[in-house]
Amino acid sequence: MAESGKRAKGARGSAAERSEDAAGRLAVRKTYKLYLGGAFPRSESGRSYPVTSAKGDHLANAAAASRKDARDAVVAARAAFGGWSSRTGYNRGQILYRVAEMMEGRRAQFTAEIAAADGISRTRAESMVSAAIDRWVYYAGWTDKFIQVIGATNPVSGPYFNSSSPEPTGVVAVIAPPEAPLLGLVSVLAPVIATGNTAVVVASERAPLPAVTLAEVLATSDLPGGVVNILTGRLHELAPHLAAHADVNALDLTGAGELAAGLEEDAAQTLKRVLRPSGDIDWAADPGISWMTPFLEVKTVWHPIGV
Amino acid sequence: MPDTATPPGPAASNASLRAYLHGLPGVDEVGVRERAADLATRSVKTAAKGRAIDLAIRMVDLTTLEGADSPGKVRAMSAKAAHPDPADPTAPPVAAVCVYSDMVAVAVEALKGTGVRVASVATAFPSGRAPMEAKLADTRRAVADGATEIDMVIDRGAFLAGDYRKVFEEITAVKEACATAHLKVILETGELATCDNVRRASWLAIHAGADFIKTSTGKVAPAATPQATLIMLEAVRDHYAATGRRVGVKPAGGIRTTKDAIRKLVLVNEVAGPAWLDPDLFRLGASSLLNDLLMQRTKLATGSYPGPDYYTLD
Image 1 (tube, rainbow over the protein chains, first blue to last red):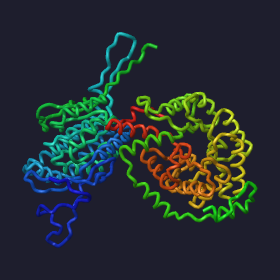
Image 2 (image 1 turned 135 degrees about the horizontal axis):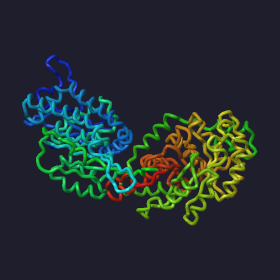
Image 3 (image 1 turned 180 degrees about the horizontal axis):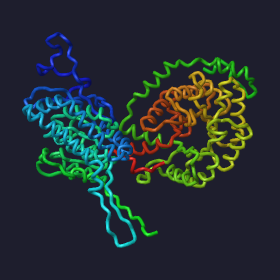
Image 4 (image 1 turned 135 degrees about the vertical axis):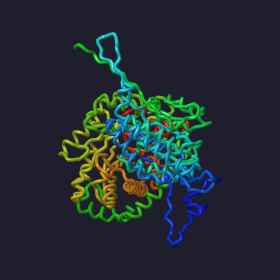
């Protein structure tokens, strides 16, 4: 499939997307864009690429992000990190819960997008959307509790009070799993931002539309701009730049597939934290805290006592 | 352009200065903005970008002008000026450091033998509101301490009130106090309100003996706009055509990214000419710009984006 040129017009593939409807009204079609720093720009390169359903029908043209969009996303994520990480866990929880509330209102849209992308029934798609919404609620609950669970006061042989507490790693580049365009995306994104990191997400290349809709949800959920940045486009083009970028602190390779080994090597140059899950992941299962801990740094403080 | 009127001599009256400056052709503001915007679209990539970045680094006047400046901070900045990228010795040193006059001695000591010059702001920077004696004493002290470049501010109040004679005399007096030091005259274009005023102030400073004309103090927004820079470059170009003397230009304030810096270089090349692409005739007054230039330099060398964690906090 050829990349379409600058300002590609919406395609006329499916019957539902004719430029006029039965009543003769001009259709208002949506431009699928990136989500960078709280705004919805087109790709800096002006490119887009066609997205098809499981059956091969044309669904839309999504923006094909370039390496400069990836760089801009990292800049936005870095700028947002200070504010987001210094918010109280309680406040982050409120915002993550708000994301769940906003998703609830878009249920029909998410369901239709997933059903088309994965070629599954509406009922099954609906249950995936419900699971994704519940996942936000799940992590909203964790935001002000993970420190107590992961942190510790340590017994030491000296007159010191010694405590360890987890702190966010920084900017995390997340490669979303291609097979689960919404539930998988939420399952890798929510734990990253719940603990105070900011994220640059490369959405599923095959099915980016639920990610774009999720971006619209995030933009209306009191989430500060730049905390989550979503790129759509060619994974092999974007991922190496994110993996080698010195201002990215950690890398989640969940959706990297066969690129994972190379990306791990790129990431090693700057000593990034890398998460590379192995085997098939059951996205519907209880995630526990294993998705939060890879992107936390433990800070230990020694404080003299008895003075 | 200056052929149309007789340039003012050192004894020119306020009336004749006024007649000369107001006789200068008016600036087409829309035209200037469009020309600057058009030149900003030039694409400078790969090898050319590498050369532009190195040239821009050599043109930087690394500046710290804060109330909280300490000898330690000036020493740290001086070390960075001489060796901008400790990890890469091929990165050239900057042109000069720019400090307040009481920090000149510290900077001169720290930069001994490096070839990096020391510039000092003087004459009651940034407002310029002080008695003449204080301004001259400030200047003499900085020169005595070893500053080889003086950045003075003009009296914008007198300029806007039409007292051009006063501005002219101040510049000549400070130039005299500078002795061999280079004089940069800060016009503070953000306070001059119109493009016509920027052109008038440029010519006034040039005729009064400025070696450089500088856009801004960095304390007033807008600072180094492309329009103001373009008008000033036109003035030095026309002055060279008329007299054969080359006056330098220094945009300062708000230049933070490599892209901004390269756009300024394009302006210089296209408006004043390639002769001005030299640290002796064009400077960039900046503090945070240097890190961005170094990061872009590393990006070109290694292919991957560097992060600010790998560079100094200024």
